[in-house]
Image (cartoon, rainbow, N blue to C red):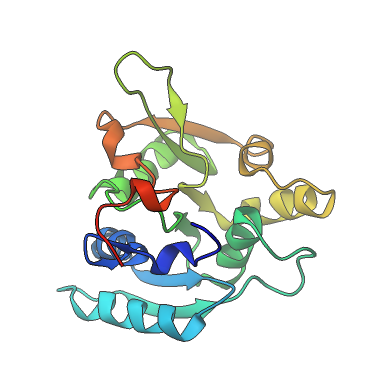
Length: 193
């Protein structure tokens, strides 16, 4: 994104993060954002997203990665921050660049995790002609995995997949692979500045 804050880059006329918030708000009891810059702008996006929901979830606000994590950047630090500050046992995390998340993401991941006794549920999908792909940064995690993931982080691990596979996890199939198409460049977004 050329150094720009990805979640605030416009996609279809709205900041990219707005799309994910709109998909997650109806599925959540509480909703928050972990960001390390433009906190005021994200607070406004979160507020606006919660106002448009019939059964509005509790706002957890916007938090920077916790200072207790060295090298505070990256998805794994964000996941640890979300786990540390959620009032609920189960925490669904997603990056800001997934505008088309499934509307049943939380329920499906939770029901599979509970049925199989897993502590982490990861969605996976498969495009025609491609291999199965796990979407590691879009995960439902039980707070009891925090010590395991934190220990991996302290040892220097920064890959979400590597940390999660140290936990009792499972993959959940989502047949619409387009639901997990991420916007990683200015060229792949739909819309302008």
